[in-house]
Length: 185
Figure (tube, rainbow, N blue to C red):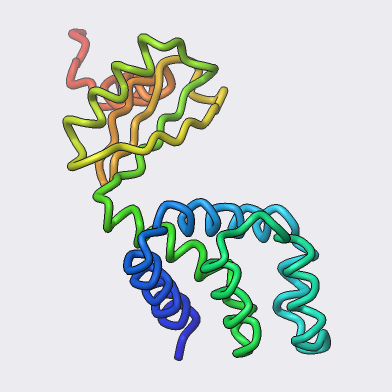
């Protein structure tokens, strides 16, 4: 089986189990934490994928890192995953679980890129535009990119609204390069 299929199946199992036990929000927060820890610590990710480190050592390390921070269901799930030799897929399982919960709750991720920190009025206008494009709830992910000079870029699924200065400059360049004006001699 490929890694994507394995991680998707384990994530779906955790989703179903957390739904049955009515602790989906806790499992969601836990898996966000797990993903963040693995994503931020390259050494931990290498350890999880290492065939040299024995399973019992990996279990002890995982328990030491997440001691008291995880719901018992999530903790047990991660321990089971490790005991089955699938700890190398933990990051992908966490990511897949996060996406599956968002799909289950009908939450759409919206990316808002701006040149600087946006004020509340502009952020609300961008969120209103995103809500018109998206179905259900909207989860805003803000990024700062000084290269867009000013304004913002809003990405909702496969749609993009480019209200940036750099986007307008690109458009003007295209318009001027297609200028049909022929000077009279």
